[in-house]
Every structure is written in C-alpha cells, then in structure tokens.
Image (cartoon, rainbow, N blue to C red; front, top):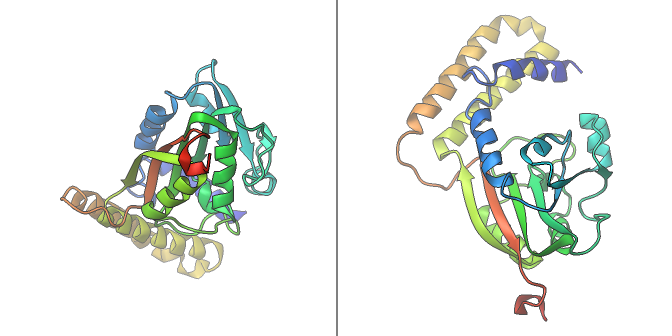
Length: 250
C-alpha cells in the first residue's frame, strides 16, 4: 500500500525531469494517442482498458467497449470496464468490431498469439488494430507480466493471425532507453528505502539528483543520430486481411 501511495505522489512531478519516467513524455503520448485513435470509426474494442481513459479520444458517434481481465481490473486497478473477460476468449461475435486497441496489454497475456487470433476473429475484414507494447521495460503489474516482443516477432505473430502491418515505430533512441532504465533503477532504490530501509533515507536527495542527471543527459545525447536497435516501446497499427485471402486457406 505504501508503494502505491509513493507512486501516486510521484505523478504530480511527471512533467519534471526528476520523475523516473520523464523521458516517456506524457504530453507526447497524449498527442500520439489522439493521432492514432481519433480516425477510428464504428465499434471500437479497448482490451485491457483499466479505467477506460482512452474513451476520451473518441466522439459520441463511436461505440466504445472497454474490456479488462477480472483479476487485474479488480485487484490492481479497482475499475469497472464494460466487460470482464480474458483476451484469449472474447465474448464478442465474429466480425462484429471495426477496431481493436491493445495499449500496453499484450505483454500481460499468457498466450499472446491466442489473443491476436481472437482479435482477428472479432474484427471485420479491413478492421484496424492498434498495438502499443514494450520492448525493454521493467516488470510491472506483477505477477501478470509474461513477455517482451521484438519488432520481427510482432510482425510474425500478426501475420499468423491474419493481419497486415501498416506501420511499426520504435519509441526512444537507444541512449534514451538506457537512461529510462537507469532512472527507474534509481527510483526502485528510493522506493525500497522508503518502504523497507528508512535508515538510508538521508540518501534520497542524492538519488533524486541522480534521476535528474540521468534524464537530462539521456535527453541531450538523444539529440544525436542513432540507430533503432533498442527502443523502449513499439507502436504499431495493423489491418485485418480479408477472410477470403489465400493466406488463410480459402
């Protein structure tokens, strides 16, 4: 409980470089979500919706359906989605949905290929699927954190499920990813001190300074040209292939 309280208190500093997730700009995320979600039309299924915060990006013309797994929705988030269900067994009719959103969800599904197959089943031909998923990021929402994905693994899994990838983008340059992990590691030390080893509380100012330095250096060095081998996250969109395509044995 104390750890959750500490994290809630940290949220007020999210826009400042003393926050361990500062490099994951909340402002940029909101803009990116708007760009990718607002063009969606019809019936939209948000799997792993938690409190349904993505609902705000859709107009009243959209039929938004928020779905979450009972254990995580009740135990971790204390939220009430429109539907409680397992992503591997969606209680939704075949070819009845126009878009599916999986934001930071696929890593929490024990059988991700099964979940993607279900998404393909409920989507109409030509329907869109939006996926945001981590590549390098600490364990979170334990014990419901099962795997990480490379871009090649994602493309292969989506192809097997009956999707064509329209775009796939890595988020954060390698040095920014390294800085993010460094900041989170320092934050873990701070949380451990505050919850278990308060005798070391005098070190907290130094650790906060460490987060600030790591974040700023990561941001500045990240301005230099770099490769794409180590993003923190992937953002992608795919389209449901026609069920009459040769790839599906028609």
